[in-house]
Length: 503
Ligand code: ADP
Image (cartoon, rainbow, N blue to C red):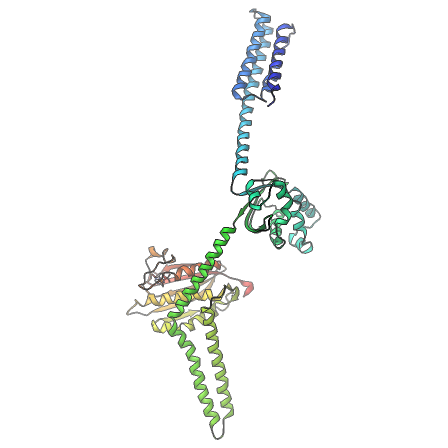
């Protein structure tokens, strides 16, 4: 604040007082005191403004008394009253303006404080050149961003060079290792790695569509070449459609991503361990599945030997036996291959596969186990169902877990049939696979606990099976739910997104 402002206001007040008191003009000179009040807005707070207003009114009255005495003539009295009213109204308005300015200043200070001090990188950016480029393209009839990308793949990166960084908070500078906003501003185009052009295009597509906000996970580089996993958000104030003031936040989620990766790894390890443990429980069934074709090979081999060992060898029959041996060997090797897939520790694979085929294969693998538990399995397949895209081994693990659980639950059933039913269908575009048993079911109150890790009601249970099923399905964009049947028994419903294109 300049010291001249109060001096100027005081001088003006004295000049007005002198003219008002000493000159004989028949005009309301004192009205000019409003200028003094308005000048005071520059330096006075609300209280001081009230004092200035009161002072000006006092000078007006003093001037009136000095120049007109106590002979109250109507003309001068009216002029005096008009001046007093003008000063009073101006003072009140000035106080109001002062309050508004101080509220605004306070909010600006608060915003700056948050902007500077928060742990999130906040940037104020000017995208107006990008907005103008988009508008020009649209005006020229090029309104398909995908077509633009195909024709000019370098466009998004060129736009990145045209974004202006207006301001960036300290967290931004620290996160990217920049010494100053200018430093960051210059480096920005190379902080988005070349292999991240796809995310630049996604952001551009969002601006293109006129969306007022955008959020995406991406990768950025720091000035010293470290790579950061970031969560990027962009908000466009509705009153700035020209995109000259876009608020951008950047969160460094590298540590969170690492923790997630570690968690996924641990979950995969756990899933593998429990899968192997389940396979251990199914040893009898598996041995039977492998043994069956081996036994058939031996039988066919012996038959072949007999056909060919005759004094007149039966070549056709001998050849048929050999062909059967080959088929059986292939069957055995297919069973072993599938078992190896189940027991191996490979990273999750993305493939398209049919649920019906998976169910048939799993039912075959578990035939002996079902017999051991005296369970009768019925399968309702629908071959027209779309395919699932995901890790076949993991989905098979879910089904095996559900079937093993159902068999174990039905062990308690005496005097009635132990029925197990697998069904699959398409419900509102989602694939649903159900496993229903006629066991004792469960208390509806415990339904929410079933999927919790370590929840078990079995003496030797681990309580991990259903929890792993749930995480496998969630990783596939699906879910699992359990319901107790009114007539006893439980139904587990697995939902998976369908992929019509992959069918
Ligand atoms: P575990 O089999 O080691 O107990 P799970 O996570 O597979 O672990 O199962 C958790 C619990 O859910 C079981 O202990 C059992 O109480 C209940 N449960 C699972 N499947 C069924 C079923 N088909 N019928 C009744 N209860 C079930």
